[in-house]
Length: 183
Picture 1: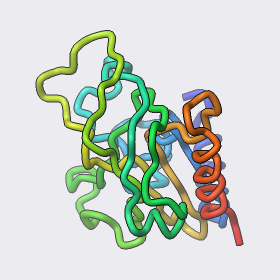
Picture 2: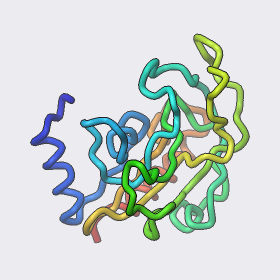
Picture 3: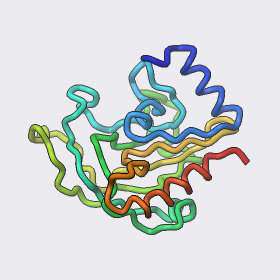
């Protein structure tokens, strides 16, 4: 809410005119085409968690491993990402028909860059609800075009220097930024 209607408009215009957007965790949630009025609608994905955002900190925190897709390997130059910091980020999925009836299941310019491996143990304050979606196999990092620009949204924190293996993740982060950078 803090960026307001004008701020949302400015961000959307910046990307549509050829700029880039990289969002991690809450920044990923902000860019989604979600059911919340503050969503930017930059990336045709939604947060699949049925309990988001209330309570927002229910899934857990810890280090997770990701499988990088062939499209992601072309962008990142890596086949896997190990021990990446996760702090309750969104589980990314395609825009459901009820949100946008004209949306294809996965838009043709959508790149699933990485998916969660089988769920690793996470630190939690409370047990997961029985209807919680399993993380394993869901999208963790996706990219897409928006107008003339590009967008990357990530559930995980590649930018966090206190994570184990951050040096390797920093190269992946640089590759993502280069992918969205105007040419």
